[in-house]
Length: 428
RNA sequence: GGUAGGUUAUCCAAGUGGCUAAAGGGUGCAGACUGUAAAUCUGUCGGCUUACGCCUUCAAUGGUUCGAAUCCAUUACCUACCA
Image 1 (tube, rainbow, N blue to C red):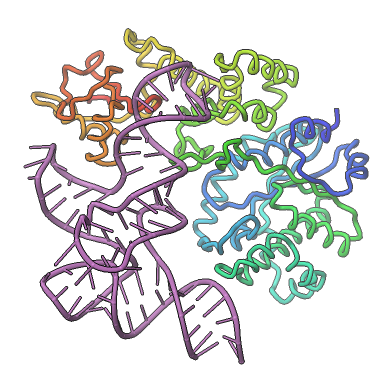
Image 2: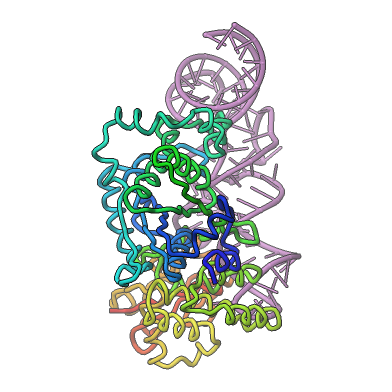
């Protein structure tokens, strides 16, 4: 199966240039690239789609290049943004690039002999170029009339509130320059990216044609949207990051488990790699999901596959066990062994044993300490509303104090707010 | 530069001297139902406080008043029309 068929089946092709010609080209291995701007020191689940697309190409024998946007990231891409962005300092950029590189390395294969992935920083080829040279060599090929017509720029020009700075306006030139350089130096013939990158990609295609006389291609991936209209990858608490320090593995797993029924099959196609879940399996999961949605087999498989991919098999197993214990219905008679499985998996907080002696610590304070309630007032409301459980027993007494007699196995307290928010408090 | 209008809590938005921590809606949080769903219904939704209550908030600063989100002045930003 060609990579294009594969992507189409997964619903991952939003648009592409010269489809017929590209199909022909892609019959043999080609080199392609996708850029990632280091706007934070971790990638998040939203970045996975283009990144995994690179991986998909690689699995079918193509040569992927991941471009860390040291140069472009210092400018800020106006595409899809409604407001001018704050420029990042050089130190932050350096830090972000270093962190993101580590994550990229985990998702692409840099070791394979046949078609190893490459990672480059576009700062490496923009550094030595003077502003004047850039204007003469590159700027000359761009028509402002065309640039202004591009969606990303026009949207900002029409919005009188925000406008667009000259800096962000120029972003397109840098990205186009990247494509041209990669084509020239690495024979890169295809750029992929999110559908908001269309304008930048086509700019690169034109520049490459004008400068090198080469016909290169672009392919965009769809913007992932939740059926309920909310933004994919964002929860009330913020984005879901790949870095376990920002989003714990357990939360990451839970994020996928909580996928809306209507989205789950689509997301299996978008996010899983054939090496983890085969096409047949996705199709059979789709059937199961329709026949028997309450089993949530598709959700479980999606969460397992994603956790395995990003955090590895040990972390995945721990999450599965912890989730099984907490949501399996047998928490009341939990054994010490089982409990030790969820400690550290579920958010865990420590408390000094001394505080639990005698009168103990007020429950409201413990809720705040555990991070389950933002303030004591809110904690009180949570208790009154019937949303707080100590060791899975509902507690509605606001004045309740937690003492050492509440400890399970002499050291843990299992706090829960609402249905899904667990925190283990460990005395020490 | 001129004229007119605007800036309210997490978001949208009402409020034009005391009854206003401030209507309504969204989002969020929690409860019931359920499948760790969806839909629906209920409660809650500035901070502190067991509570009476106290404190901070209606762009910023200063003023009028017993009392201001509401009136006045200045400043900043935004919008529309004109130049």
